[in-house]
Image 1 (spheres, rainbow, N blue to C red):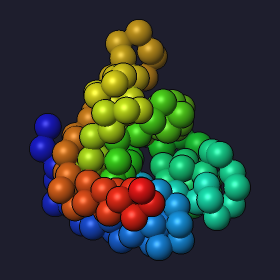
Image 2: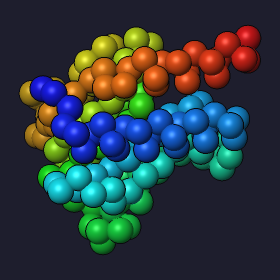
Image 3: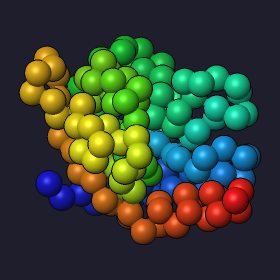
Image 4: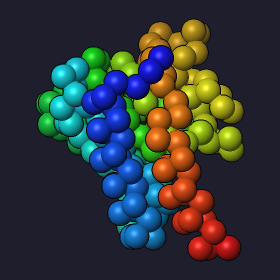
Length: 153
């Protein structure tokens, strides 16, 4: 599957959120939830270090914001755009929220759960699956992550 123009615009916003997370000392990951029309209805960035909350991954923060805005947990028809392939927790959260599409930037060959290490998001044994588009703005997302971790080594 290919990314739509609205996905690329949402990825630009997610990259800006990721940069902000990095500036705040958290792993630079940003996420945006768009509705079927491509309108942003939720956004988030990693806030684990800022809040001390182990579940404050960018995807979870964005899903919570979208659910609050829509007034419902069911986000079917929506797209989650994130700069890094979701981990197991975030993949589970997007399935539980019934997100229809996942668009992500960099692959996570250590903890990814949307096609690299695991493929939870498309697992046929589960009652709900999402369409996955990976590698959108991969270079930009990877560069942010690499710079963040290089500075800490």
